[in-house]
Amino acid sequence: MANHKSALKRIRSNETKRLRNRYQHKTTRNAIKKLRDADKKEAEAMLPSVISMIDKLAKNNIIHDNKAANLKSNLTKHVAAL
Image (cartoon, rainbow, N blue to C red; front, side):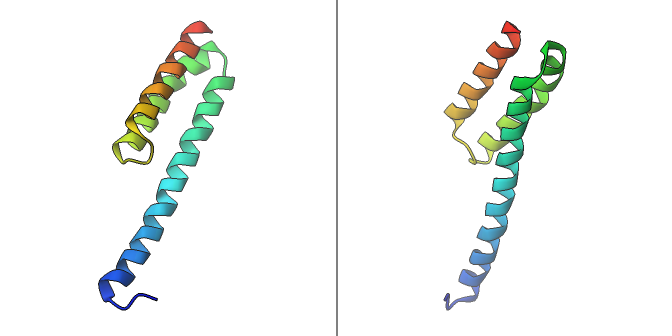
């Protein structure tokens, strides 16, 4: 158990951040799956919002910048090929 007030606060804030990151990451993964299953018109409409979600994850270091770039590239190619 932590002995300092700041350590206790760090434990609380880390748990809050962990849950928020987990929720955002899972929501983005579900959006990506939904985009891959959608038809062309739906996919084109969803693409900007999904790319925005991926950018936010990368900005907050929830996923790596290169992973974000790879995801966006592959999704864009997928939508273009539909």
